[in-house]
Image 1 (cartoon, rainbow, N blue to C red):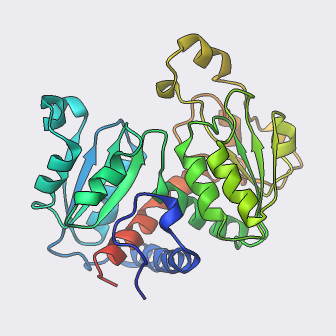
Image 2 (tube, helix red, strand yellow):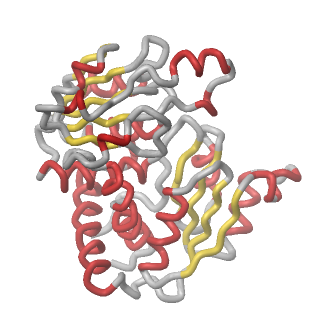
Length: 306
């Protein structure tokens, strides 16, 4: 089987068959890592990792994924160290880099930058985050995490908490989970940071149940509690960020007697206290590790290696 797309910029491109194929392949990749440290499927192939916005997990996860596939990595980090600082367009950068690599993963602070890049790329292109827009590979690894932690995706109740307005991870994950009509949502956010209408409109169109609230306690009734940080880099007003940054703080005491799985795309900046880490429900570090087999699966399919 093959994916329905040759470049991935948005979770909206992914259909149910794509999702199920990638979930199955990620499980095979994880088994290969555990058995042999990876595969040699991508021997002779090169990934270009272009990260023009700060990243730790996503960048290292992509690079590790390519290395565990037997491929190689070239990289560029930070706008100030790239030709973009000289005025080069994203399009020209991608045209050049496509001559050096077989697949490109790019993170950029501008929403829509991934679509511009994919439109001119002659090699498979993957959006590793475009400002407050999309983060489709995070959504895929989150889907894989939910499947592993909860034993399946159908019928899951997920609560998303925090910065839902600017949080590209929650936008992409909600769109991806909408492929499973029995899933339901609770959106918990300050009044100033609600889930955008473009996301809630999609759920209404599909007849998928959701509620919006400012009360964290309502989210604690869910199967999955997806915490997010309030993102300082998205605020023009520093005072507004300070007012909202710790609107919700999850502690071990709040989770007593609850059965929810706790996820977070990381980094956390105070919204989950460290006493949560020892709880069996704390899945956020396992979630981060799941990025490697899922990104291995995506790269392998885009390069037609499986």
